[in-house]
Length: 87
Ligand SMILES: [Zn+2]
Image (tube, rainbow, N blue to C red; front, side, top):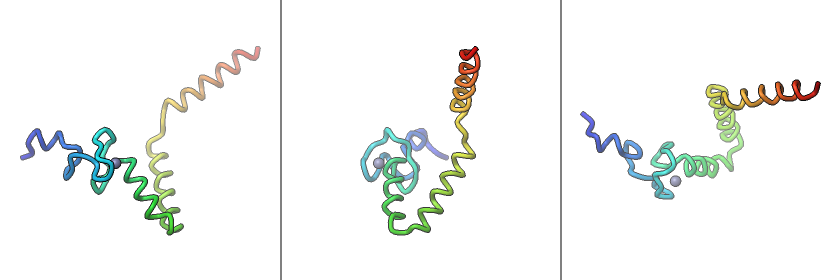
């Protein structure tokens, strides 16, 4: 049974980022915050174009899976404003 202190931890295995020691940025993986994880991933894939391409494809999939509704809304507003303002 998990205790409340377990729940409050930054990640399951770490209290803070093992690289930059922040707990302000959400945990991503391997004890690294989102920022450090992306950086580490970039370092790893820099010399491996195939790996990088696979990673970028995955990022695009993630963006597709989590569309930002405010973006679409602001675009609609802009279009509406443009139409209205033209007269
Ligand atoms: Zn970090």
